[in-house]
Amino acid sequence: MNSSDLRTPAHFASEFGGGVNNSMIPALAFALGGGLLYLSYFKGKQFASLPSPGDVIIEEQKPEKVQLLEPLSNFNYATTAPIKFRPYKPKFHLTMGIQSITPNDLILLDSSYKRRLAYRRQLLRSHPNETYGHLPNATWAVSEFYTYIVSEHLPSRFPAHFSKSPSGTLVQNHTTTNTYPIIPQSATNALRALGENLDEDFVFLLPGEDGSWRVSAFAVCFPNGFNLAEKLGWKMGEVHAPVPGFEAKLGQSLERYFSKMQPGVEHAVQRVNWGIARTAELFTPSGTHVYDGEEPKEDETLRPEQCCLRVERQTLWKLPETGAIVFGIKTYMTPLSELKKEEGEAERLAEAIEGFGDAMGRYKARDVWGKAVLEYLRN
Image (cartoon, rainbow, N blue to C red; front, side, top):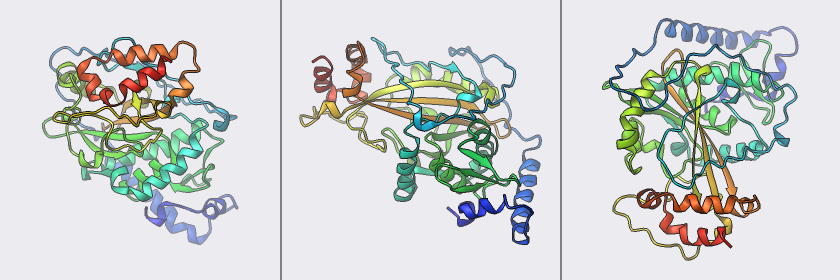
């Protein structure tokens, strides 16, 4: 990250000392100029609505009144337990499973936040190519999203943990004491800042010349069996091609759904995805799925008590100015040893694992871990 995009606590503190000194004038001029450039670029500029022939099998969203963010003035993430998602069912069905959410639920903080931020910063330094990147056409979309998150969402929703300087040009994360500019100098800097300040991962989609939605930018520290750096520019159908039944059941409907989405955070939605992880490791860019041509073998060294239920809470919304779609992904890991303490959950999960079916079970590597995990859950 450019050093000018990461401010020390002294930079932030100086803004609370009263007037603006001469050394700050160039910085303020740059920020104001950048803001004017940003606004002038977006004025009246949106991607044209794409045609959406046929019926959409996913339930359409209904227009709602814009909802203001509710400040959590006395919120303490350190005492807030992670949400317990238990989304599995006896028989697996490949669906979007969309649910409406309010802007208040877009970003979640819990007791794992500080620990995970430290790990995310480590990953961003050690694996920069795998954890963030973008195509040139995503520059304005990344800037739009970043500026909304740091200038509006975080200080408004979590005022005890994020605050803006009096000039409104900087925001401070009180957990790390680092400060950042409201207007980033580059999309690369913005993506890295998102990665090191939030426990959510983000994937940006933009329509290509053929109208299909493509991966255009990402800040992903906790991948689950994929490397998005290798998939920049790919269509959604290409990214999900290995998923059994994706194209037949969701492919075209998903494209139409994206094109029909109403812009604005007030129309955000969420879905939940789940699987079994062989360890508690969050950074798994490969090795979690079985692809065509591969022959999975049972892992006889597997220790099922170290396996985890891995749940992804995925949010989805369309930016109002650029029309880009942003996926947010927050990952929850529950050791099976902990899940077994919840009454009835071990058997429910075992039934759901058996309910994957042959194709999905193979894709999710059930042949590798399934026997040991099922025995563990039922003993």
